[in-house]
Length: 444
Image 1 (cartoon, rainbow, N blue to C red):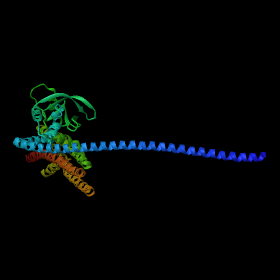
Image 2: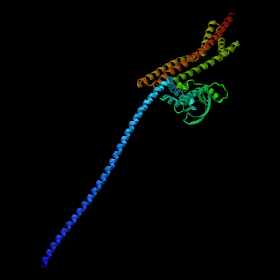
Image 3: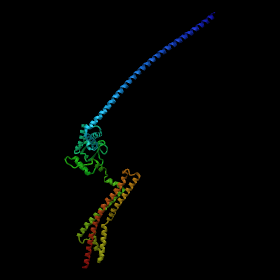
Image 4: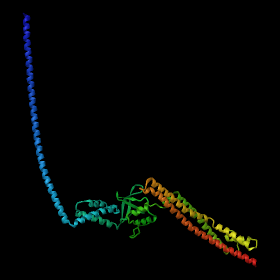
């Protein structure tokens, strides 16, 4: 009996337990459904709030867009009205200005042309900023104001006024070694600017003064030094009316040493031959002068047979001739005259040959220079003249050197030969006197 009750009780307990679990599950499902429903309501509320906010923003943006469109329409209308007003005023200005428009155009053109002159002028050292103003005025499209016209007039008046002044000042100068030093500078109008005896050059690119590495001749520098250091009112001074162009050409042109170097080996050979010829001419001229003095002294000392003089040697020949026949004496005197003539003309034939060789060497240098020029033209064309300048320089310089050496040699050779011939004529006259004296002595 006890087992039956327990069994019944167990079945009864199992049923109650199952009902309790279902109740709890149902209750849990209800709670979860309630929670989800609350969450859904919250999300819907948030979505609704966000929708309302976005709707408000959209309405605000549309309102701002409409306001901006209205403002844009107003500004377009105002812009059109302003453009129309400007056109009317421009037309009115042109009508009222009349000839002033042409005047302003001429002023702008003058400002543009004057800006380059002012920029390159040495007056800009003390009066800078004028070129920039003139350039801006020339390129401006607006009508110049009274202040612009006054400043334009002052800029031109300053240039004209300073062109007639000599100004001393201290300016930074770029030296040939690249350093910058403050120097006492003298500006002579718009033409010359110098420091001491050194010419300076104005660089308009950076507004600096540059000391020329190569200076003009010493004569110009002496005048410049006297001008910059003196206190007199009137003194001569070198001026460059081209405002630097002539000075640049003078500085860049080669000097005598550079011109000779352009002649190359042939040029130096011509100079060596010329030096040898001049040495021979000088020695022969000195020897002939000495012989002439000795001949004059021997002529005054009649009867003295000094073997150190040409006349003494003739007298000695006449005294040593023991054969009394006049023909024998004449032959001996002629032989001695021929020997004296050869001695007096010694070296002159060499000078004549050197004077003839020099132009031929110059012609040889011309040919070689032209060959070099044509080779450069063959290799590089004729686009760059600097590639051909070397050969042309050699061709011209050697010709110049050959003629410059040959002409003095020819002239000096003629003079010295004439001097020798005059001495030979004098010796011939003395030989005739000796012969006549001998014939007269034999006749007696």
